[in-house]
Image 1 (cartoon, rainbow, N blue to C red):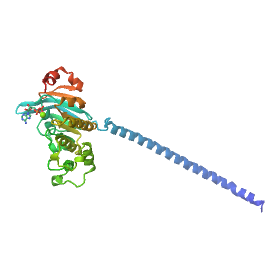
Image 2 (image 1 turned 180 degrees about the horizontal axis):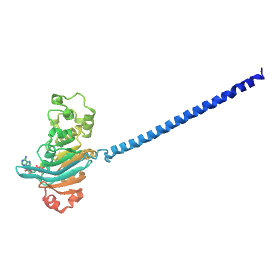
Image 3 (image 1 turned 90 degrees about the horizontal axis):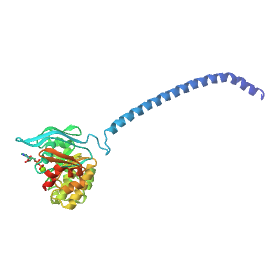
Image 4 (image 1 turned 60 degrees about the vertical axis):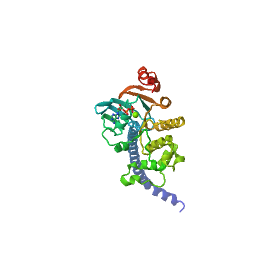
Length: 312
Ligand code: ADP
Ligand code: MG
């Protein structure tokens, strides 16, 4: 019994090994199939990755080096404003890029405020003014605000009876309609809290806006533009009437704002301009007299003769 066992097992295993071979072949064919399928899948994944790369580089190409979009700039072409035949802005061209802190200077009556009025829909104008590729001319002021364009006025236009936080909530809710606009919610949103901090107003959150010193009213107004998500800020003489310390703080605030926004400041204070301007446009009689860095402007003989030398 002991002798037959291995024979039996041998004779039993001989035909079985043929089957094994066939099975092995079948398995190998299956594995080859599987490998081919995996190769095909890998090829497909490679193609998808290549496609993703292209899509990603398309997405990156619209972002500038500050993480904003290249289209976040203001482009004014042939802007023209007349008041009863008097030309206040004369076929003006002006481009202000994202991340720029541009100062607009010029003698009284040069047309600085009128330019801001024209691009915020307060006076009618011909020509073109686009921000993020959207035409601003011909639109209503509210619709222009919704395109991310915000302005301040020389005299702060905060609601004096409401607190700082309520003013910000009101500004934040501007996209709401009708009665809802005035429904200020209890707790301040993250956005309001953050912008209050940015504008150094946290300690004044519950104070009535009317009792704030002039400087802080202007900061509140800037804060209102920020909570509205304005990406083009147009500021008409923001530091007029401020103390030197307030001017410095305002300049620093605007410098921070301009990092990922487009900021245009109309200003008379030349020291303030020298300290904070990235670039300067000098206007005279509704047209651009000169444009460049602070240094370029200060060395421009015509600018010195017409404006800087005029002792304004
Ligand atoms: P700036 O802000 O550079 O001092 P403005 O833009 O306020 O100058 O004014 C430019 C010119 O247009 C000035 O001569 C001014 O008198 C005139 N102007 C501005 N607004 C009006 C208006 N609503 N009606 C008539 N003339 C105006
Ligand atoms: Mg003005």
